[in-house]
Picture (cartoon, one colour):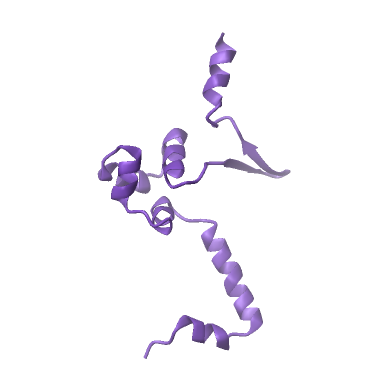
Length: 112
């Protein structure tokens, strides 16, 4: 007979619950695009409609290992988020802002 998670959790020690919470927190901070979409409660069809593309395009994006930053940004924004690219350097984390929406304006003004 299956037991409810809440019942099992009550029987865990505080240390075990804390460890479980930390592991969950780590898992929630890293996930592939298809899981992120599902976690937001959206189907591929719904996201495709938001982005004005076909469902097959969403499937392709979710399984790609390499894509344009602009494609990833549009995908994340369609989920209600924003894309932040962070470089982890020995000195610490650095946000790379070169790919923000304003970067196109920066390029235009630099060429003028």
